[in-house]
Length: 97
Image 1 (cartoon, rainbow, N blue to C red):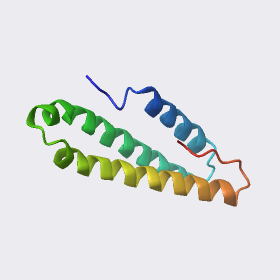
Image 2 (cartoon, rainbow, N blue to C red):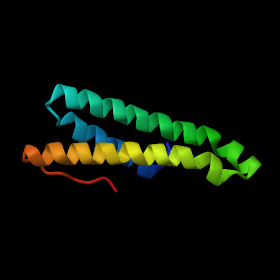
Image 3 (cartoon, helix red, strand yellow):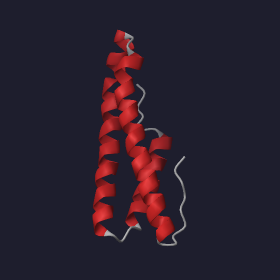
Image 4 (cartoon, one colour):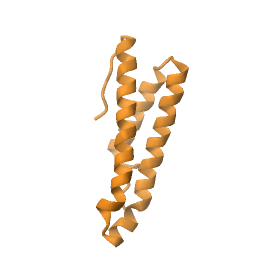
């Protein structure tokens, strides 16, 4: 069965986020970013758990839409926050794909 969480692309993205968050020295921001990364993982795992149900009920758009929106929202927050921090602190920023 398909698993977004186990996909090579998502695992690479997680690794990049973790490496970037590790470079953050502002403890409040670092904690926030770690919490958002955990939210991203939870949303992706939730979407994975619903795949089989979506396939059988043929309600992919309706059931997956909310999960996809949440995943996108969390990714945008992580990307913007990390980018802003890195630019403010003259750290080379590598955007996730």
